[in-house]
Length: 508
Image (cartoon, rainbow, N blue to C red):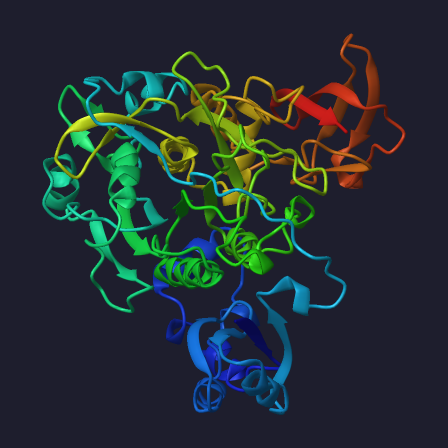
């Protein structure tokens, strides 16, 4: 099993000159509002390359990726050698890490429960806590309920979503837009594992006086990418295929409650050192998905109490929101996977209720379940609702205001990351970025290191230390702002340009 990467895309000029042949108008519109142009990664894999590889004796094509210009194939080693002689094959990467140069032998980890623990006999009639913990109800009260936003769910199956009462409100309003079953290569999305049924119920479910999801008026695509019968790297390729399809359909938010670390064949398994955002195939796909202007929300994993307590693929991806789990009181749930990423980034990013979360099951009952599988979608629904309120912001800006609203933003730790977000505060900050004659104004990155940038060229930027002492003042015509000389810590800024905005920044 391996990935085969190609040298080029001979049809690139055609597709880039005719973008509607590869992306929907909604996808192009989503990108245009964020200043993201189509590029060669959006071009499909050349059909003749796929044909020649599929016709190679002993080779089976399992999946394909336009973003990586690659195919996921299976075959015997001798047959794979023949692939490498094809003139359009740039390289191959084996799922068996021991066959790739410079890779030490794998340790074998005990399997962990990557899904959930359902308490089917525990009667729980109110989902208010998991929304109120985030102050999400305050957005709902202002009619920010995800309307106009599309969420793609990547999971293991959705039996009953087409019949259960908990999803009737979505069906009656034509908010289930479709989906695809990648393992079976068909459109039968209401099949396979019930895990995927439970997940969207936390976002789009509605049972009066029992369960209200965090984005009850968003629209949904349901993609099956997980094969519950085995743990195999091809699931990562299905994940990337689904993310690419979501992108082309114009999806705004991707939610995934799946994670990968140990595989049935330990030679395919990852090590903690691989949790760097650039090794895992699905992690690289999640990073690319974020670069296309989608907000990617992934569960951190459920191995916090195990021998390998760290986050997994793709929650180590760059510029995604990795979500860990707390209980109903906001305390760390012991099973929630911890950070940081192996390259030192704060992960998980934020937390939501993942212990005794309220969900709807395939029997039509409102029950409770535990796992970061539920913390992630609860948070993802709030991302859609917040983005509805501030549609002028980019996905990166939306995710950043969420991080900055979290209760430990000034002092993150491996268990909580930046902590539990406050969506009322995030809303105020998101709307506050448009306070200068309607112009979107962003100060980034935050946390910062050697420099800061302000997305406007007129006005004055002032920076104060934690005691209120002015330490820097500069015209915005001189972007970026040099901050290399500042000590690590908390700072406060004031932006003046026909109006005044203040806020908090972190120097790492």
